[in-house]
Length: 259
Image (cartoon, rainbow, N blue to C red; front, side):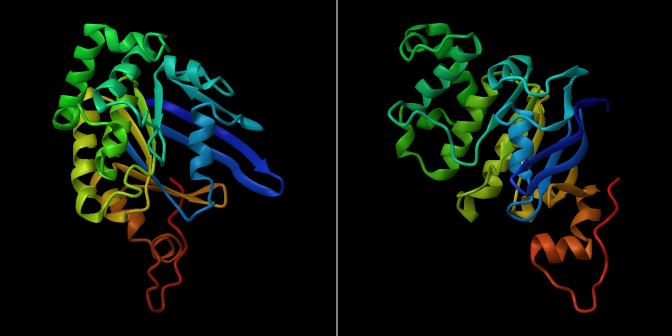
């Protein structure tokens, strides 16, 4: 696989706190890369820098060989990188179908709240997108009437409407009921893989990470402490102790080497 998105030497500090302390990471085309780590380790900061919401104080970010460091979010979206947020960013007063139509229109540079709802082509594309996510049964419901799992899928569907090559997701299962998590991730993984979208996702549920990630990157104090396949990373005693919260009697191993 070829490198699609790459960070080199990323640095960013908030006062005396180093949110990014020399991050080097290459994301391969077509992979699902999970980012794990304790709260405050810098995971969301990395997503914010990659998508233009924060500007790094040092280092570079390249996408498909082009430097995108410090570019504005809309420009980064146009280049082919989209994101979803920990809290779904939906228009609560609009239906699910209307939200999807607005997302389709925004891809074309149309930001009017009314125009996308009047164009049949955009409404048709929105419904096709919702069908891929299994959301047609709730297409006519207002976004604020959805349960959390469905809201998450609708939010990610809006990001996919932008036709990204890379999608960064900040805790896609946060707030989703345990009984719904696997079904939600199964759906989004199927849609993204079918569309050939590379995915980077921050996740705290290790069952989700183990099942869906091709590689796992462990964040610790603004650095990548480990990088590798899920079986290797999740079995490491230090990862189990510091990230998962499992203490094995007599375990003193260090986090697996950053590969």
